[in-house]
Length: 263
Image (cartoon, rainbow, N blue to C red; front, side, top):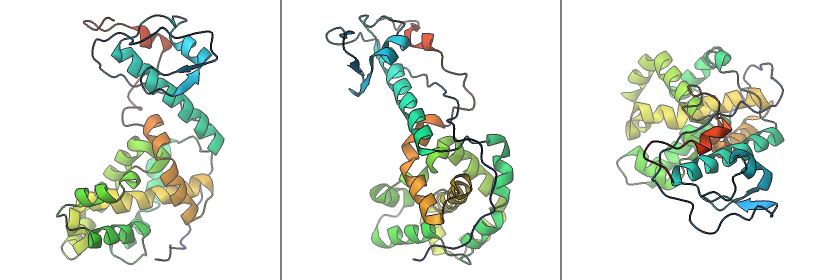
């Protein structure tokens, strides 16, 4: 299906610097580092959780130089996520993604509500509506979740906006066009395929994210969809749902022993 040629209003961009890094606290079992002590003489060290090669200096910095100490599962998990976020931030910068102004996001989304209403009423061609229609036609499952899971659910996260952005967009869309959604659901079989919420998540939110990325990156619609798809992992790491409520990650956290979880 031909992509829409509608060009959304442009918005000024900030310099393409990565957003602040936040931490993720994860619980784990009480288990010491399993295996030989890390050879700190090597310039590269494997992450004890995922096996990915990490920089020696980075490892030593975030373990306060205690490279030969044993780490329990919680500490290994924290370090693993931390180095992945560190890598994601470097990739964010190298790809030229912009700093997201969460404070102005609602105003930007408001500008695109007329476009989304046209998509909802089938007055505007939609790449994601067509993709959902294709999935529905191929699958025998009764639920949208089953069909999308078998096809590809990566577009459920709006690229580098992450799960934080997905939740903001989802709530904003539903709150602004709830009446239109209810009326259209009565006569639109595709909405009935998975329900109103699923249609918002799989069609309207990705369409909205595409428009925002077009603004951010001064990209065409097709280019913006490519960026959306290729930046999902980065978005999940940097802009996860808890990132707006957590304090910045501190390097001492990795060696803080939780009560009852000493290694």
